[in-house]
Length: 411
Image 1 (cartoon, helix red, strand yellow):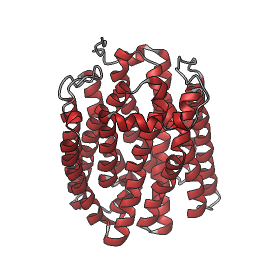
Image 2: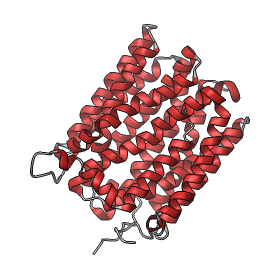
Image 3: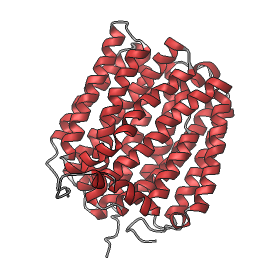
Image 4: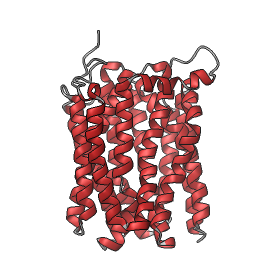
């Protein structure tokens, strides 16, 4: 019999290990946002190419795709806490390398893409380990609360990070990279301070059969498969992040600070929804709640694509973030609750490939299409596609649509 989810909005923080984990994740997420804004603006300044903006996402996604059979198995077999900390140290080194290129006036696409590939590699290993570590730090009745706060840590960074990145870039092109370096080092230290949590690991050496267990579980469990694939295709089509430097500079005539505002707007909407959900969890009709969120995300994307007025664009992005947070909250909670701990890392690795595909490949799709037909049609077509996906998945996965409670794996 399941234990009801805690009504305490700060329940996850009653556990000191989770508190350290949360702030480490917050810092590294902040650093990621600052790097993203700085690299995007610099790349567009240097090349003036939408395609190059799209390639930024692609080169970071490919390592996750190529290594997904390995990274999840590593997260299940070895100490997840140590994996996360080491990856954060590598992230700090990459921020330092970008700082060096900027200070030395050696910023070149080939060198930057090489560094971004390394960032993609460390994220490929960190993502499944980090996603699998959080459930080991709290009891099950606090898991939904922890998921909400996990999402909010990213969204807090998504609010402050882009604005800070734009402001820091306005002061000095390398200042953002310096801040990112410091934050990654501090985050790694916090993770190393977490006592080794209990973790169920495979009794035998991991072979191909065990490695493929994540795929088999996801394919066999339609709740998990439907939730993961819905997010992948919706954001793959609806993502417009890669094109924001173009909208900020050429369509809305804003500078780096304005780009920061555009990048922050989805985070503002998302964090408000995350805070609400942490205080008032979804009790009923969770599946329908998720599908409505995806549909609103697609509609808001269309509005953003057509807008040439700054406040309308920012409002549309705000709504996109709020709707996406609603969908993410349900999806991540379902995946965490329906996945056994002994395969959690492998399932998380596959999930992160889907998430990476929806984000990084979405950026590549947007950049490629924009280079052919322009940024506005590229965004609008993507928003329409997201609406279509929401309708198709609602019809194809009725079990997912009818999920009611997030307290236990019951329909």
